[in-house]
Amino acid sequence: MPKDFRATTLERAIGRQLAGWRHERELSLTEAGQRVGFSSAKLSMMENAVQPSAAVDIMALGYVYKVPIAEWQAVVLQAQHAEQVRMRALTNTINFDPAADFANLVFESTLLRVFTTDLVPTVFQLPGYTQAASQSDDPVRTARLTMVREAWSTRLGDKDPLAVQAVFPEAVLRQVVGGPRVMKAQLLHLMEVSEHPAVSIQVVPRGAGAYPAMGSPFTLLSFPHRQHNDVVYLETFIKGEYVEDPGLTEQCAQRFAELRRIALGTGESLELIAEAAAEL
Image (cartoon, rainbow, N blue to C red; front, side):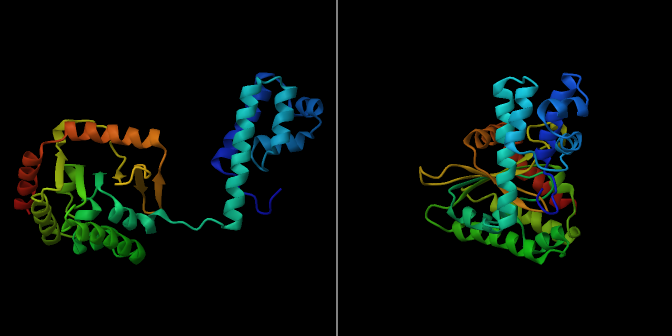
């Protein structure tokens, strides 16, 4: 067993699958262990993900339990993948942080489709708003958000500017981030940037009810080169993550199209932003 082994969620799922096979056949740990040639302790550790499950051991269990070949082969592939993930983590051979790289992708993209749920999209944030939103407790993240904003503003004056389509719920306008003065300046800035021909801002009104991707913010980036597929960027306060699978990025594109259909038009959205600013 690897030193200081900590099971991943995938390995825990594998353990539950192994236990499920045994329970379906109504075998005790002792009976199953005798059939396959394992000690009951080893089998228990595999099922409870106290130790990693080797591919050869999963194959043996699949054979003894008479599990359909395709089913045990799928679990073997999962175990092999889990082992590869752990080895990469142990050797630290991959040192790539999407959160640190994101500003570069923004600079290289031609279309940015942004859906936020709590905050004004990063590219439109004023420094005071960004600092208030991050509560000034994470200077590294604040600096990265600043780089994203600057990457967009640098492209704004280009002959072929980066197009931004942003959608967010009305609650973003009502959340007074940084106090009334900071928030009012931010809303006025939104009104200003919305006049740029490369910018589209749409607000989902409170009366819309449930809507696609509710509670799941994402940014979808498209690029000028055919060889560069669309990329989805997801971020929490813990880390950033890229999603590059074409099937998944297409799902995000479809969700975004639905969001734009449900949201107010750009003109009505601008009126709502102005109304929220006037109330501060």
